[in-house]
Length: 597
Image 1 (spheres, rainbow, N blue to C red):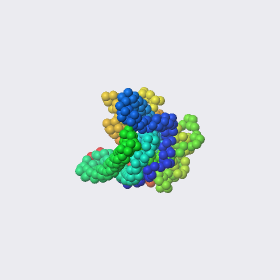
Image 2 (cartoon, rainbow, N blue to C red; image 1 turned 90 degrees about the horizontal axis):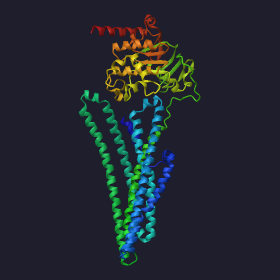
Image 3 (cartoon, helix red, strand yellow; image 1 turned 180 degrees about the vertical axis):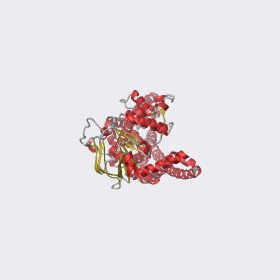
Image 4 (tube, rainbow, N blue to C red; image 1 turned 30 degrees about the vertical axis):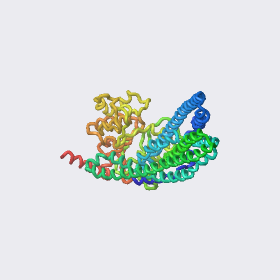
């Protein structure tokens, strides 16, 4: 896992990438009126900022030195008015830029989530879930400052510098040149800081990724850590990883601690030069005291946006790194392709036919080889075999979670690749061995927040599978809160809810993948009785290890190493004394041993 993070986090690419920036700007295009408005307000604010030093000069030279109290009051009121006006403009500027940022991030998160939902299971097979979550949360949040303040405020800093220079040179060219004599040193220092800050940022990101990865893995597997008493050993490893992260942050802070005081020193030198040169000019009566006051303020104002631009560089760098990873996810085209002109399903009967189907998860490493069978509407087909025989793969390709490489799968004579995926899945309900429940209530986990499934249907489905027995004793019954992954429910209870969920959708095809493996014998009997009623008029495909649960199936398919080895009903397969007979004998012996114990 650490290597995965290293390969993705360590290489940052460019600090500024025009192609990435162009794509990012596409997200603010719908809100360009806010951008234009914000830039116009920035120009206004930038022009007001140097007015304060200029009005200070006027106050000193024309009123204070001449003891004109009335004029001083007037100029003070003008200065107060400028400050108030600037505050109002600044409020609207901040509001609109933050509003723009949040709207843009909202749109980006929606696009990421929508895109992720459309990706094929093949993508999730090879991509850590934690990484996908990071893209939608951390990486999107890293763009917050860019959209909320970075893009617009870069204009603000540039306008501020330009307006300050305009006022400075307008007031005194020579003093301006003296003040800016430290500027080449500042440019070099900024360039050096950017280089070092970039290197330290890369290290911080790398060690943070390792820290997050370690935390996620060990919190998820905390029960294993505790049962093997590895707390102290894992703490030592965490201390090492945490120390590396701390060290990277300390190095990063060092460069900041060096750069900002360096800017302050250069600012102080500039102020010293102003006092030295300006003071001499005042002595020779070629410069006014008010001009000195103004330039001292100009110097402070000039170096502030320089520091801000360095900070904006870091925002830009973070945004480029995050956007590259976000767009890598958005550009992923691992889809199960929908047909351009899908066939409309009129009235599904449930006839399923596999014709010489070959399927591989990776290249030509086939897990299913030349699979051919047919089930008529209303029939129950059972599929058995050792682990890894390819049983679950049949469900995956029937539901078009994956596409087959060879052959064809037909539903009522129609190739399922010509049917819209969502339309196809509407007629199929699956109950898996590994049940997943969502945070919510019992009811929402059965109807999946589908308004077409009424509460009465939810209750009926629960009763048919026997889930009502434990639901009715819960404090809030069907409104009982379900915690993350159904942690407050037993494995058997979660399985029953999953079964009720499948039945509530009234499917034409019902698929059970080890659906009764996690329930006790009494509950299994209830489910078997419910299945007998519910399979009327439905096609069922049942995958089971317990051969006792599928003895009444119309047809049993025995698979071995991705191939169909035997086909027939229970009695026919026992009579063949083949693979099925051996499986049955093994389970029968296990049951005898269990009874003896």
